[in-house]
Length: 189
Image 1 (cartoon, rainbow, N blue to C red):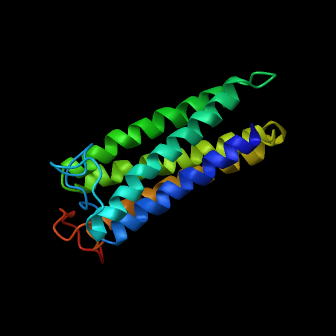
Image 2: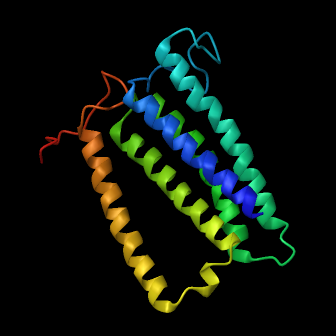
């Protein structure tokens, strides 16, 4: 099960990287429709931006398979651990949510609020998957109360930094497409 959790984490981080490639190359609307790439083709790799966007979309299938295997691994533990089963289920639901949010991002022309939600869910999935890996190694059960409290503070601070970063990104130049809507906040602010 630990190996399945680590493979799942590898692919979850991988989809975050391919998503960053979509955004930073301006390929966010390389496919202008969803779930199809465009009105005439489900998959279209005839343009540079379209290829980058399609790799990200198709990679989601690999991520989906990996998180399903991790969830099944959590369900089939010899000694069931409810928390690990829940984390595995949350991973699968989160990836399904990413598919829907990805469609909303495209259909709203890369609206910064939709993009923020898409990224925030990605970070949530990374966190859930890390918790699944740690839980599969039985490290959490040995943590002291102080370590758990410190981790909770760290998670709150990390969340604040991520939200601030999403607002800055929603205001900055890397919208994923040259014509995408941006927040009306000066990047210097």
